[in-house]
Length: 191
Image (cartoon, one colour):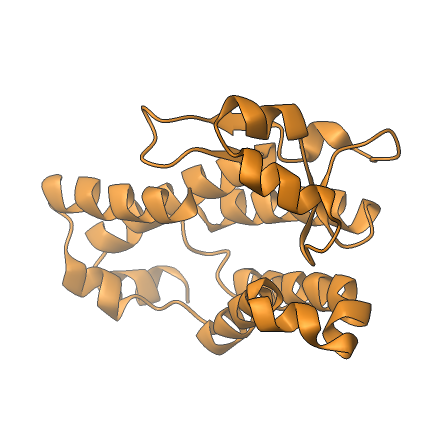
């Protein structure tokens, strides 16, 4: 859903006078840290990762470390409109993930309602390194993936959290700001 927010943000920015050049020239700091965070999360989603013992044993910690890297990257960019809201969303997701052993809880009946029974069955096996089904032991379940995104109006069905929604709004606002702010003006306003 974050990808949809990025694409919609770019489209709206271009239709309202924004520029891809402004986006490309934006002074977004700590990009390497950001890519490292996403790289660790991508590693946990690889099928091969489920066969590597050290990743299986320490997947929860790798997941939490990826959030630490993400927080660092975002902290370097709080001067950009939308990043604070995005960071709040990340923080809410981090809290519920940390409270549940390094995995984001997902509401099983919600998966069924949006047509993702196969994913529900996969989560029921307990082999996901990043997600687990909501159960009686789940902490802070109101912050978990309990919000249903069905198609239509979304291009893909899925589940999300309050944090995900804040992240989507934050990234949309950030793209509007960056696309409409020439790089030189953005740098001057942050000094």
